Length: 126
Image (cartoon, rainbow, N blue to C red; front, side):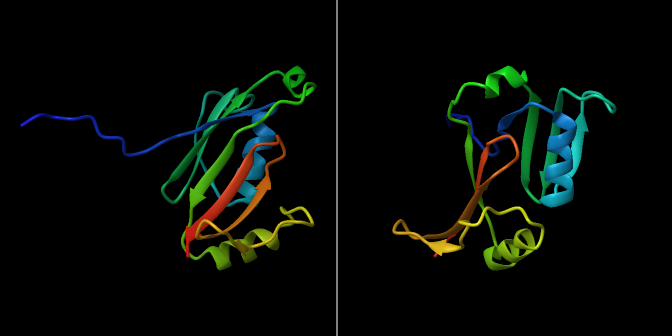
């Protein structure tokens, strides 16, 4: 019997210009917990975790934000999306155009950007 490799998790790395600020946003606004940080006072690389999702945050020079480039967009599968939408809505995270909507491709989802222009879409199948 042939043994094959098996993919079972992904830990995306998001670029941020201030890892402490990013940790504050992901922990205090989105409800993640700190999984690790390379330095307690001035981290350059850290990870946050919520339920089964782990996201890594990596410092990048602020000069990289002076030029408009596309930033990552994460799609995170979610249960109880209505409750999560309400929870995040109460924390003043959304822009005025953020909606919980059903899509033509069969999902119910909402999306917004973190303070570093990384896109976060939370969704479930309809």
